[in-house]
Length: 183
Image 1 (cartoon, one colour):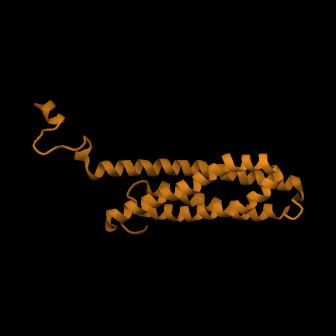
Image 2 (cartoon, one colour):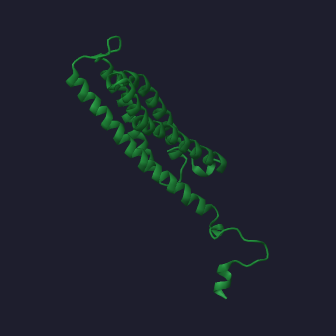
Image 3 (tube, one colour):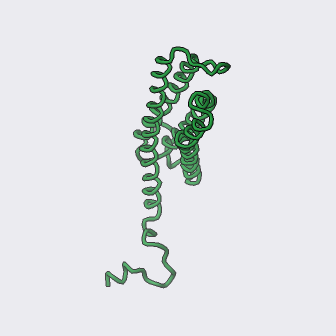
């Protein structure tokens, strides 16, 4: 599955991992900031209903960011040596859920009339909106597991590259502390 990691230069693997972490920060950081700050502040200024009509214009962009991030996550998993399968599975679940979020958004929007700021069939709208929010939250939790695995791989890869440097840099001609303890 994919190119052997040893065939890809170390700098390219580093760059892809870096881009994956930046994509994660943009996507999930934006999601958390929007959900935790923008929505409550907007609701307090404009009211819940007006904030909801604003949010319907923003969420597709968060989902586009999610799909872009998942593409980078897949590339990063394919060129990784370790935990490839678990990271690929998590990424595919996240990508599929983002596709479902696009679908749910289109279904939710059918109940909204932006001109009058009214909601048709409020109980059905509310149910679909709740499913949307729970799916976003589940996606966020999966992404945190993905982040944990990715960061642990970054750390273990660093230690595998130069295990002799784990004790820190040594000056030429000065024995390190471990050599003194052996004597």
